[in-house]
Amino acid sequence: MTQNLCPCESSKPYNTCCERYHNGLAAPTAEALMRSRYTAFAMGLESYLLQTWHPKTRPARLNLNEDPPTKWLGLQVKHTETTSEITATVAFVARYKVAGKAERLHELSQFERIEGFWYYLAGSYVA
Image (tube, rainbow, N blue to C red; front, side, top):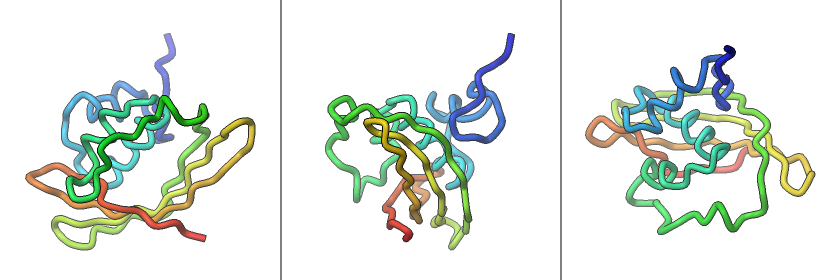
């Protein structure tokens, strides 16, 4: 039986990649958290996305089920930088389709670690 590869494109099976973070294990790096958040978007895991969003910038809700259906096509991590013991950045390109139209999200995301857990703080679009 072939195991399903993780949507984050790590080339690992989901059950040995992002699933463990979705089940509560702390992601060891900002990149691992970012990959797990991409996978959560691909799988519609809104509660995980909110849980891993920094308390200072976390929205009250996401309402993913109210957005137009999105098909996530792939993730490419461009650059990861640990900027201090508790901060890091990850640049990535996420490809997806909405209503049959291909889109790309190129973002530089900021992360902060609080009590051993990484959180998504903010992101800025890269042209």
